[in-house]
Amino acid sequence: MSPISAQNWKQVEDYLRRDDRCILPIGSTEQHAFLSLSTDTVLAEKIAQDAAEEEGVPVFPVLPYGITPGFMAYPGTVTLKTETLTRVVAEILGSLAHHGFRRIMIVNGHGGNRALEETLSDFLSRHP
Image (cartoon, rainbow, N blue to C red; front, top):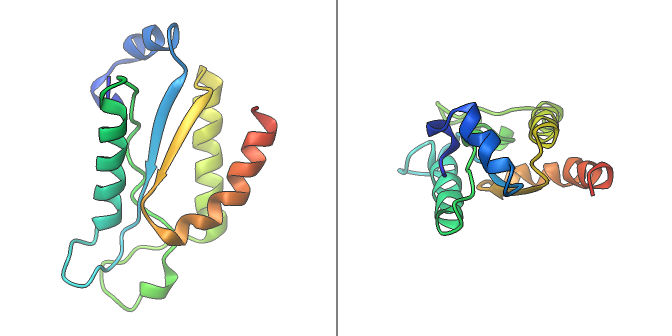
């Protein structure tokens, strides 16, 4: 069933009748020497898709932006404030939970996104 971007809502509804797992990859858009600005995003998405493939777990579209203020000197880097990213992720998780996803794996492709740990702990305390 992965990626979910190829599915319609009825297919997701049918999936949720038999399983409650999904994967949300989170990356970053920043410099990586001579590699792509999307290195963290591409890797998070690839790991998520590979992990989901055998079980048919849906993979949601990768969130391509993260917390990376230290690389703003490099053109093309896009950073979010910690509060912005945590709010976006909390709202995404809330949406997924609303529809019945209970086991949500987050694949984090960027070390700067570790600031999400508090948001994830809070979400888990409200959604055991």
